[in-house]
Length: 143
Image 1: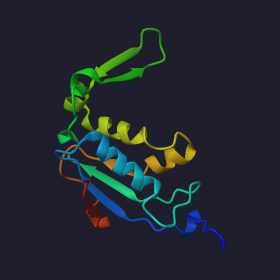
Image 2: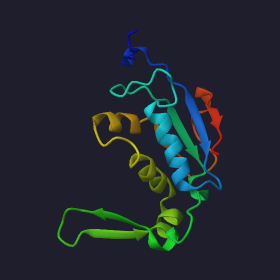
Image 3: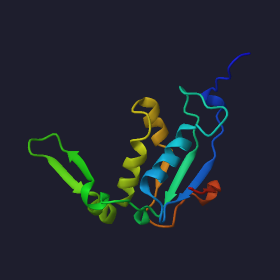
Image 4: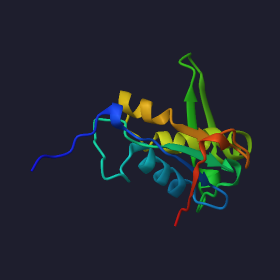
């Protein structure tokens, strides 16, 4: 019996929408990464981008558990001396909720060319509105 290896030309992509309101950030990111990779399909092939498109709405209403709002830090460096910028999760949630969710999902994808290709199928929006109505996305529930 031969194993099935999917080709990138034969991939059928669907659109899914995840409502992140009152959902834990890590659970939302894990579910999104799982679908972006295509692991929910029986035709999953590790070396092919066979995942689906994900829309995450209400990123500003995502929840962090424990003391993460004060303790979790996000680091950026401009590559110039003294260019380190540190923000807490509270600042990120208030001012940059989209980037916070995007970083969480990106960290759960492979750190390769394939992972960068998968990441391009992620669309995050701070509020309830998104411009992808024409794609007829299916609603995904997070348990």
